[in-house]
Length: 117
Image 1: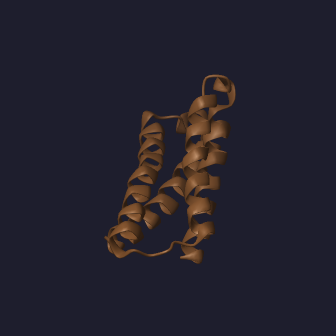
Image 2 (image 1 turned 60 degrees about the horizontal axis):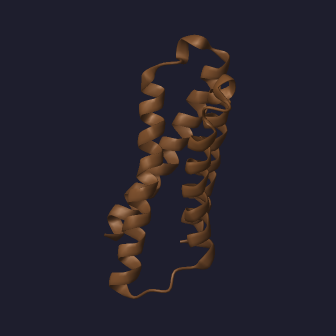
């Protein structure tokens, strides 16, 4: 289960970094606006749920006390994805900027959570 948690962490960091950079570029370059952008973005953000599930399973099964900041960064990433989804219609004219920023933000939160272990 720890290997899954580690693999998901890297998938979240790389996936959200890719999706965030792509979305920011798509804001400027219209030909980069493809359905695939939203598929990558959705997958990268849905992986957060799997990551949280795997982390909770590890903590319960092994009876470990998880660092509070590690939990905080994970919860902040989940909330960020939810907030972005909630504002997508209100910011429809800037949706690429919204998801670009959120993707890079989640990438940073993931890196920080991995550093804290």
